[in-house]
Amino acid sequence: MKDINHICVAGAGAMGHQIALHAAACGFHVHCTDLSASALEQAGSFSRAWLEKQVQKQRMTRTQAEDISSRLVFTPDLESGAGKADLVIEAIVEKLEIKREFFARLDELCPAHAILATNSSYIVSSKIADATRRPEKVLNLHFFNPALVMKLVEVVKGPHVSDETIAAVMAVAERLKKKAVLVEKEIYGFVVNRFFSAITKEACYLLDQEVCSMEGIDTAVRNGLGHPLGPFELLDLTGIDLQYLVLMERYRETRDASDRPSPAIVERYSRNEYGRKTGKGFYDY
Ligand SMILES: NC(=O)c1ccc[n+]([C@@H]2O[C@H](COP(=O)([O-])OP(=O)(O)OC[C@H]3O[C@@H](n4cnc5c(N)ncnc54)[C@H](O)[C@@H]3O)[C@@H](O)[C@H]2O)c1
Image (tube, rainbow, N blue to C red; front, side, top):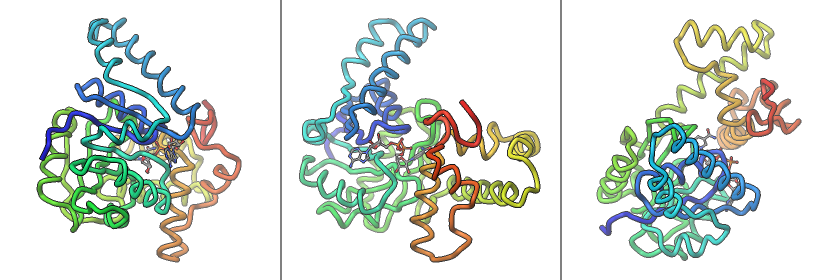
């Protein structure tokens, strides 16, 4: 397998812009693409501000910051990014049909050796891989929010994924200075999001039943379980829109009423209160 030097990150939203910046900081050449001009603009200004802060705090020299900047391009041009890519990390919207169409397009645009990874929170890559002619090179590589800070990545070995692909992606994770956990079988939510789902479901139930205020639930979980963030603080960080989409996809599949988003999620989703990214969610920012 060819060395991985060029990474194309598709999607410059909450996850993509930080995955792209982190990968450039770890020495990769990175193209980060998005359909939205404002997402690309925000990603560019975040990166410039973050690099400047690292220089001010003497965590890197100005030359190092300039080197990182020179390896990182935010562009709407998917063709040029995908055309050079040894690895694509897809971080676009969490909708299966859109991801399948996107992977079919990537398959056309990317070199034959390129590995196509999805950062999806819940969708297993076997639901996407057959949209391409290279299923053995399609897998889940799951980062955590904020991607510049969180150490973990989950690498998921679906039944269609080759050992060579897994080995190459585990090696990339090491170069990204991440702690990679290999998930040996596909399962909904992999490892971490199975815990996240269980906790947020319970938190929303307690809130909807008026058992405790959201501040009370967050305080209880932070102080009683030692979590750094309470479940509502975490939902505001990861995005209430994402949680709504994930639960609706799940509900469409299972038709189990207990998988439906709870009123606490639906109300905020319908008011476009997605959390930190919109300035309001469970809390105000
Ligand atoms: N938010 C989290 O905490 C988190 C954590 C881990 C994984 N994820 C996963 O990462 C992915 C992205 O999540 P996010 O929170 O960054 O979403 P987001 O909504 O913040 O960003 C998604 C970006 O993708 C762009 N986009 C949508 N369709 C596109 C297309 N066809 N081509 C190019 N760009 C497109 C949008 O313009 C947007 O900027 C999802 O699959 C999600 O499940 C999210």
